[in-house]
Image 1 (cartoon, protein in one colour):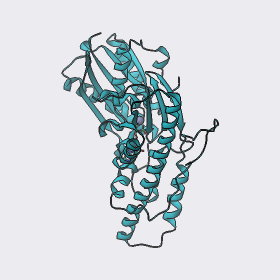
Image 2 (cartoon, rainbow, N blue to C red):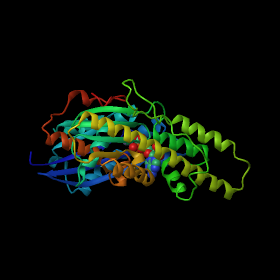
Image 3 (cartoon, protein in one colour):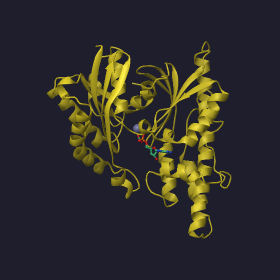
Image 4 (cartoon, rainbow, N blue to C red):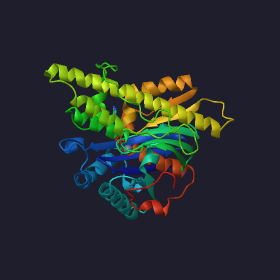
Amino acid sequence: MDSFSILALESSCDETAVAILRQDGDKTEILSENIYSQIPDHAEFGGVVPELAARAHVQHFPSLIEATLQEASTTPDKLSAIACTTGPGLIGGLLVGSMLARTMAMRWQLPFYGIHHLEGHLLSPRLGTEKPEFPYLVLLASGGHTLMILAKGLGDYQILGRSRDDALGEAFDKSAIIMGLTYPGGPILERLAQDGDPTRFALPSPLVGARDKSDRLSCDFSFSGLKTAVSRLWRQLPPMTETEKQQARCDMAASLHSAVGNVLQNRLNNALRQFRALYPEYSDKIPVVFVGGVAANQILRQSLEVLCIRENAALSTVPMRLCTDNATMIAWAAIERIKAGLAPIAEHHQAQPRWSLEW
Ligand code: KG4
Ligand code: ZN
């Protein structure tokens, strides 16, 4: 297929998203992309409520799909395939998206590509002009996952490390709630950290120096202790005026960014060592991609950039709107599969709340 268009849906968490991309030879064009963010619907509960999320996907998909088709100036008969996130994620949302997408594929007689949500994230930097080539390292940090991955090829992924407890985005969100801020806390803490003193609160950098079963420096993460330390230090503060409290929030946010920056640098350095051991002949800069909602964080991007310059690695990220959940990355993952001549995989058609990347 030289030229083809693909419509994709994403509904694994709290974003209802639709995108249409066209591939023409080597050229990819995002014809239209739309997101209904459910953040305001969940804010009062301090996190995502699965049933509310599923109901909101049902409510918003029809108008979003119609608007996306209109903005792309296309009609269903001009599409070549339908893609949808089928896992991992919240089962209600996955069922809504996949049933809708499969029904459209059936109605319009198009092939259906069930896409792994994390594959969508990790392939997304390849949509850009300076695309990382396989093999490359992936640091994926979102509200549900924190993983260090070796992407050896399309669909060939090895997990080098994962969080043993909370995901990084979750640790940011929970720390924000402790300090009386709203959900999602990650972007709020990033803003506050700009005006804070990173040395005021001594927070731990968990698992620095830890080793894995093969006695290599570990690429695992642990963030629940960091959140507990934020809670303990916050509760120990004396009574404060509102101005002092706001400054304490800024200082805690800056201290948290400093501790997390150290952890990410340390774990990426360990992953780079493992990469060099696996590919001793590799002489170019090692490609590293930072993806997932937390990758929108400029302070953490900067920490990783510093390490990459020092260690002869090349960091790629994606535009902010593609860091958090979106359907463009799902359409792109399907395009990568179509270009590689990989047929849709029947087992990927079913919604799967748990689904390993090492399938
Ligand atoms: O990838 P994503 O949209 O959804 C999941 O698959 O989880 O990630 C959402 C997470 C939330 O925890 C949010 O607080 C975090 O990403 N996040 C950030 C920033 N923007 C979003 N964390 C830190 N700094 C940010 N700028
Ligand atoms: Zn995600």
